[in-house]
Image (spheres, rainbow, N blue to C red):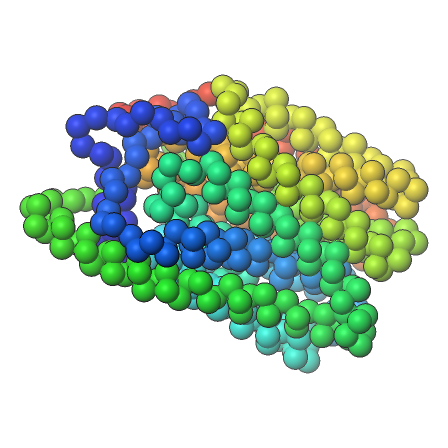
Length: 448
């Protein structure tokens, strides 16, 4: 989808507002006008897109959780200190903030399908390179390459869903959210046993996930070509109808004036902090408590796999509620219980604490749903999504680094766990604020 195609997508339908579709959305999201349909797409495009979306989503977390499962071996092999290891766990948030900001511009220039295709290629390249790194700096650079591709895909998959499945936004969002959670848990659970089966080297254990990323590139190649052809056809149709010269993209509201936008961004940042600390450090917490490496990996998988069913259920429930603050509070309280359990009896109740933290981490599908509910127009959703995700990931950057430093200098997990539990208090408060039934357009004085 080129610049012109994006403008056409963002332009409200003329003359009337369509009736809300049955996508599990309500409120502000249901009031958003539907995008006009473009030229007819080839029959194969829909099924290939579904496969491509699922494969892309499967690859959005294995680069992180596979490393978490082998973090101790990787740290030892590369001679990382606790502080450097904390920096490694902060890199995902930094890359998601920095490269996520570039996604809208790249999408306007090349089309979202082409950018996702390139993103998957970057993921595969980084995963192919980093097992051969001979030092922490090279390992960090290769990881950053993969994470840059993940960042671009993170931002643009919702655009693809909105563009090609406008009547099934809820279903498709649930599908790729489930695939994301499945890829996260699969890498966490399978990395250690597969590493053992392939000879025991942590380098081999990390390398094998490049194969999944390479497969994910394939369906996006024909999709990108079809998208470019559709963009040319839409430009020609707009020129023939006399609309092309007058089309201007709706810039949407000024996000920084919205208290709800700031509440969402900060809520996103705190939930991301908890998620990346969990993915990066939870296996180590269990291993330090006497749990075996393979069991610790499975426990992380239990935490991550909770997102598979809940990522499908939570958006539907949230979309049917006028105020989602109670849901945010419940998820935060469940997380507080999990951290308290890790503090008091990390090994004795390991399975229960892993389960509770998995439920708490489902603040992610909630905040993604809130982004759609707190804006009326397509342009408002795009701006709110970019602002909340970029600002939120920037907020989350210090978390894993601070946790790694506290772990190294305190010699245990008491202080890190107390900090993580403490951060859930403002997260709950921000979730209650972000869950109020209002839109950024209303707060910024924008007309529908």
